[in-house]
Length: 284
Image: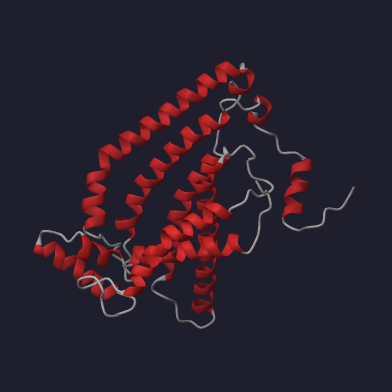
C-alpha cells in the first residue's frame, strides 16, 4: 500500500465531495418535497416556501416540481467522489500507521474536514475585508463560519478516533499487561457503543422529524438551516464514531504493545513536524 500523500487528487476530490454535499444539503428541501413529501398541507407549504426563498438556481425541474439537473448531478457525485476519495487517500507521514482499508473512510472524511477548514478561513478573511476595508459587511459570513465550524468539530472527532489522538488517561493502561489492556479496550468500546445507541435511539425521532423534516431554520437575517442539518449530523457522527471504535478494537487486538503506548512529545518529533511542513530545521 502506497504511503505517499499530498497529491493533487487528495485536494481536488475532498473539495469536490464537500461542494457536492454542501449543494445537496442546501437544496435538501427539494428532495424532501419531491421524494418524501409531508402529508400535512401546512407543513408541505412551509417547507416549499423556505425552498422557494433559498433555491440557488431556478432551473426547470426534472422530478415533480423542485429537483433540477444540477441537484441530481450533485447527488450522484457524492457517492462517486466518496469512492474515489477512499481509493486515493494515502497516509500522511505523521498519521497512525496501524490502519486497514476500512479506516480510509475516516481518513478521507478527515481530508474533507481539512477542506472545510480552508473554506471557513476564506469566508472569515472575506468578511474581514468587506467589513473593514469596503465597509459593507455581509449577512451570511458569521452564520456560515458557525455552521462550518460545527461540522468541523464533529468530523474532527471521528478522525481523532481513527487516529487514536483523542484524550486518553493512560497512566494505568500503559502499566498493565497486554491481556488486561485488551479487557480495557473491550470495556471502553462497549461504553462508546452503549452511549451511541442510547443517544440515537432516544432522539432520532425528534431530530429527524422536528428538525430535519420540518427544515428548522436558525432565525437570523441569513437564516440558514443549522438546526435542521446539525442535529441529525450529531447522531450520524456519533454512530460513525461507535463503528470506528469497533474497527480500532479489531485493528489493535494483535498489535505490538509498544505501538499502542502513548508517545511523549520530544525534540525529534518536533523536528519531524517541521520537516513535514517544509521548514528547514537548523542543527544545533
